[in-house]
Image 1 (cartoon, rainbow, N blue to C red):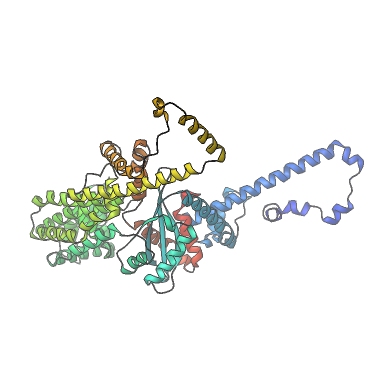
Image 2 (cartoon, rainbow, N blue to C red):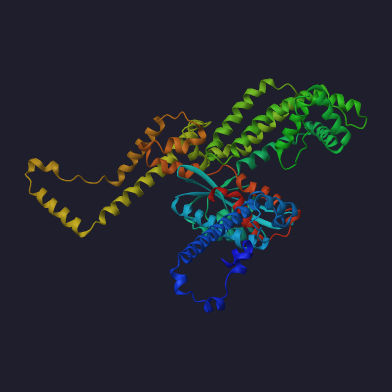
Length: 573
């Protein structure tokens, strides 16, 4: 309270009597009995309540301010900026901006602790969780490990960041396993992990093996490698370089940039002018965007390049036809990458259908490819798909998740793989039903003594019944070996249950509504939570480009973790 008074009401603090004054001042009988004395006490009480209310409001504003810094990637020193102070003064002249150290060491840790506690409570009640992991380096060359969790809560697929921790030591599998194990123990989820999704790096794969966790390679990473390798065609190298030179020129040259912009505005004054897109070596789809944009602006580029003597060589008609073939082939891979990289709906169940769709679409595109370079790229893509993608149809997580997704359960390319998926589901369902029966039997044995006596009494009375009424005797509990037949019946009902909804809402709109399919819904929620990619943890890496910037390049590791956690887990607050 004194802190609040000193910040917001210094005049009231000056008017507060000291202890000595309070002791020397003894109210008289007249003062106590006088109505004005009562009014004064009431006013004092109201003033205290008002001050407490203002203190609560001040605390809330402080928390919102700290949250804003985390969500909008703003540095702590922003609190000292003159313009920000003027803005806050205009909004609320009574509010005093707290010191940045208070936000950094008091308010933000309090929010972090609150959000962490909420997440721990959720993780304690869920049955299964899947993880993604990724290593990255900040602009200060500090290495970090990010771990994200994916689970189903109240019928909604949730994803969150667990930790973003500094890893200064060597990134061996042993060191990474030790770090990940500590995180699993901290959140008490080690026995709940279904799988860990990472890129296909050796140390990550071995890390999962050391912890005895199921590893699944990131499908988006595999698509990236596949297309990048296919684009390294010798026949395509010269054209790719030509496109790079054109994009680079119009990005570097102010004259070229303005000329291209003006040409577009002159022809289409109501349309926003487009810019050329430069490639990024680590992302294959940047080549796709570069080729596609050059085709979109080909007419404008031809005019502008002829006007500018320093401009690179033009794309001729034959090269333009090659680009059209290349873009048509890459377009379906771009669609696949976008679809598999989402985290609002199940994605592990999309991998097998996407592979099937890629083969199907490539076969449809093939007759429309006219150029020799286009045909060479087509062949290269198909060869690399066979080498890198076909194994996914045999992976346990992928095939079970696909079979338990009512939209995609028939999307296997080969019937034997679908049958293998069905048998894998049947085996797990048998084990699950056996566990449930044994659990129920154990619960039945834990009856009270009164219940036992009552049961014995009833059984004694039944034994006295004539043989004619022996059918009234209590039926025996089904034996454990009947679970196989029950599993078959549940699977039969599942296959016969139609679903016409969106693939993104399958958990809530199918599994939560079709109660007759229990306990198969438990298996569905176990495998559908597994993400098909590690993109979620890679997005944290992208976000830190804003967190660790020129204005706050000396952030300590604990601050980076707090900011990443609050930024990526806003739904917890």
